[in-house]
Figure 1 (cartoon, rainbow over the protein chains, first blue to last red):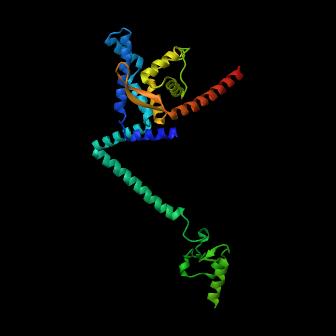
Figure 2: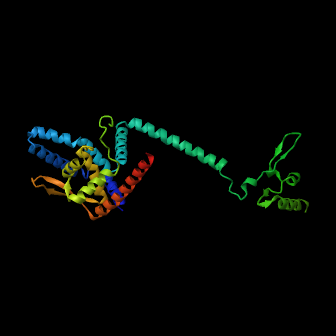
Figure 3: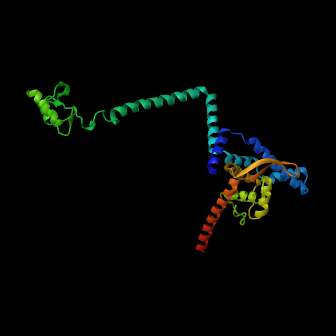
Length: 186
Length: 115
């Protein structure tokens, strides 16, 4: 419960940076003032007391950093600072920015287009059931080396040699062969 | 560090939070300087803290809702932020102290077994 509460407060402090800064500065100033009072009470001069107070306290900027670390998420703060710096740098050099953006855009675009084609043609299975068993039956004349596609008509011999595990136009090869022979021989 | 100050100890993670909670529980509301002065009294000379190192612990505890800081005036009429332990803080203190004792006991037992 308390850990959750702390998480959300840190997140809130990240979203509203600087919200607690004035309070921190005020608290540190008050801490130093109390220390100075103590040293003056021990008999130091004002100037000596101020130095002694700072020595006892340790680094003030260091303390602020430690405090910020605990208050918010430092890595998020750093990331935001880097991002802001990057944007500022890019805005200062528009020609360079345009070149880079264009190069990246073209590179990514070309890659995407290429992958779409490869994915459709090579990687994805055909949109039919049993797509891995679809075959094209071709005739080849051994004397001429001439090949004839299936569009030129089914060849009886070819169909006869088809393995029964293949699918022909949605039917098993056995059924298809039977129907084809029936159609041919009447 | 160790070669310079052989008898000085470094705080384990979570120890400072526990110490601060305990001090606030026994002493009532304190400002950071008061806390630091008190801790120095108790822990010298084995532990010397920069007073600034208290602040992260104070933020952690306040964000957990275990302590609450309010601006008040000191007896010398200086303004200071006084931290007081909350009811959730008292519960947290008991829980954390218990956890600490268990861990310390375990380590102690292991060390005794070693020798």
